[in-house]
Length: 358
Image 1 (tube, rainbow, N blue to C red):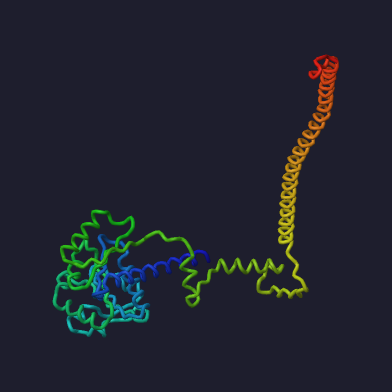
Image 2 (tube, rainbow, N blue to C red):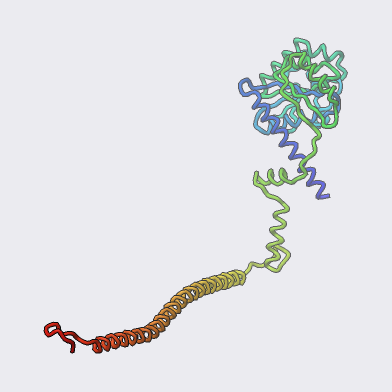
């Protein structure tokens, strides 16, 4: 039951917001020449034009402007029953000068919102709407109120809306989603164009709602957004944190004295330990890399030292072999020198001065 009431309130707020949006669009469409008198009609019956007219009037009244809703459907009156008002007289009494406009108008139950009914069983409504008396009624109403809205019968069935549209500033065509057929809507549009009506636009009705609680939460408690579901979740969370499911009777949590140093939470300590281990691993990897590079450099230096040592050893071996070969060569030279000396000693020497040999 509570959920149904909540959904109804949400739908009502959505409708009100849609009416305010339509009013804003009307004002945007007539910035240079503001529209004061507007006809609302439809292509076929039961499209929601009367409800749309009433909601638009409420939006205008809530904006601080005075608005008069005129019952112009003289064949099937329904605005008075929807509003819940009863008027003893109507538009015909004003046109026949039996009453003034202010005497025939009644309050619609909201500030700045007024209603002018029409008498039942009026013959030839089209002729009455085409009369000079009704044109004067329209002028008097526009002089007395900021906005004047006319709820008319379907233009696809009767010509009342087309006739009245020649006297007013604009026309809004109400279309029910899944209601009137495309050809019926086009016929109604052509009928209004033939009457040289200023068609402001179309208003779609019976649209599927969003199903959310946005409007209900937003337009609540002095224009402050308060979501009941979020408030309930916040209360449950607060009760669970204090160990009590009742957020009203839950005692206040005593303040914990702060020590000289703030202890890090367990998760934070674990994160710090993880970062320390990661830093140690990186340092170990860097040290291992330096060790590997040092080992490689040492290996290169060792190889160079070994090569130098091998070169010195080879040089020593060569030096060891060379003296032997040198000594043998010396011996050979000495032998050769001795042989040559012996030859010279055995060869007789000639004394040229005396011409004889010794």
